[in-house]
Image 1 (cartoon, rainbow, N blue to C red):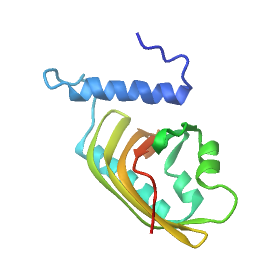
Image 2 (image 1 turned 45 degrees about the vertical axis):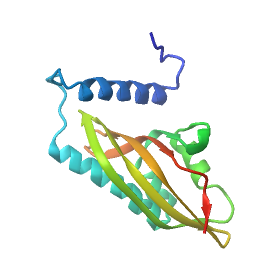
Image 3 (image 1 turned 135 degrees about the vertical axis):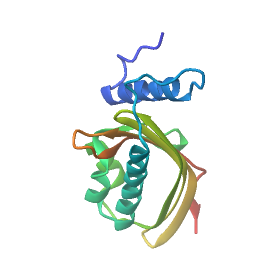
Image 4 (image 1 turned 180 degrees about the horizontal axis):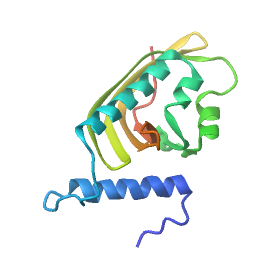
Length: 170
């Protein structure tokens, strides 16, 4: 038995959501529960939400990026770094004081989108190029976003995980 009471609320939510999606959406021999609805329009909306996230990064505006995330966002960074939990912590982690980092190119190739009700996931490949203190870097790798649909119908990223090789200096 896996106990989630020792996890932060948002990590338990993400864990339970991923488990639900795995069991409910990948079992080919059993139909999804009748309450599980994820339409073609939902898929389009999730893909658009991921693109809003990309566009926000390309705008180089912290507020725009943060607007694509839920308040209880969980980041699970690459290279085994500790998770970053909550919008305030994510803002401090991604947008620290000091010389700005400028995103010059960012793409996400979303390969699969699925979901159930107000929970969805999108996975694929990403590529990013950025400049900081006059030096440019790049990276590419796999990405998984778990999204939550708010009461207003807007999809936002609730859990983000990515993996990639060590950063390449250009």
